Length: 238
Image (cartoon, rainbow, N blue to C red; front, side, top):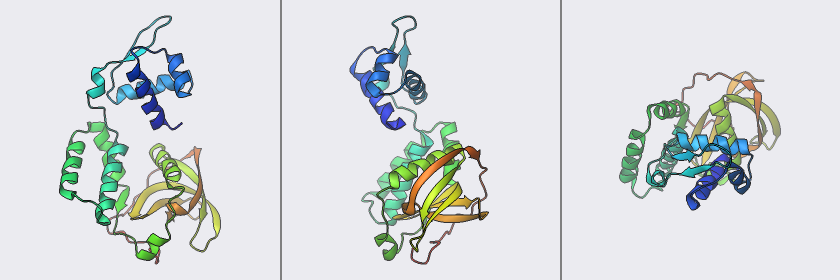
């Protein structure tokens, strides 16, 4: 179960009963005791008031007042909203653009200083360009997109290299070790801007052509300088 899904399940369990032991929660969400303790700490960081009762037979309980209080938004969550709004605008799919932007401005203004710094760091690495050509749109296959993009996101924030199985435009399957440096979006085509460690240069990889992705937790990387403004489709076909 993904962390986000596990957090939602934990909150649902805590809402439905006044008191839980850690062992009971672990059993209900299908995770280890240590994982549940770590998840509860992260939920507290997000603004949920979860009280602990020490001692034998002690447990945890969710303060009902925290259910309606505003949880702390993460930079990646706000970034996702802003990015998808920008993509929808590029594709003329946003029915109320001014109201949507006003809502996003309020969300950004509510961010804590640390989250705002993370958001700025993230947007220095993401660029939403013009929509892809009709040919590019027809070739997109998003069947594996969510799983692959989740791996890219994790590797980017932890600054670990990734091993890619990639199918190029000619249909050739290759294997690359890449530093995930940024994202270029030319809706509906998304590109990973990665530093190819073998070729020693920045390359563009269509995310829908990534067949498999594994994070190399033994190899870290440093962020490199990117020039994303005015970026154009790196391939002639869009």
